[in-house]
Image 1 (cartoon, rainbow, N blue to C red):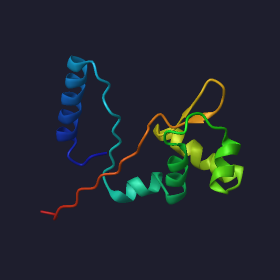
Image 2 (tube, rainbow, N blue to C red):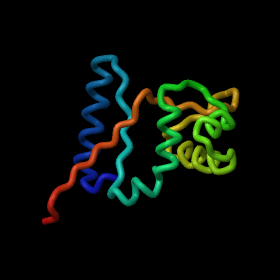
Image 3 (cartoon, rainbow, N blue to C red):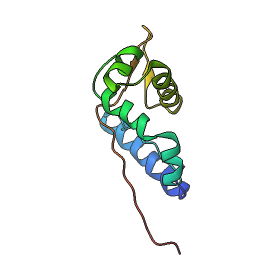
Length: 113
């Protein structure tokens, strides 16, 4: 959650209006109130999953584990967490896919008032 939720809501609404008027799809945005919350959901191992999945198309869980050099059970846990937050999706055939060609993380740090 963005701590300035009103500004985030306005920015999101503006993006939706612009996308509707232009016919372009709006980019997905995930916001977190703090880096701690972000890093609790996107751990270094989950980031690794995103790295191999971004733009790779459909992949089986076993193939993801093989590419990561990790056991299937631990990759399954991380994939499930990423499915829950919407960074990965499950296909009709049961494979996993990252619907994004790229994932960008953007931080703004400012002095507390």
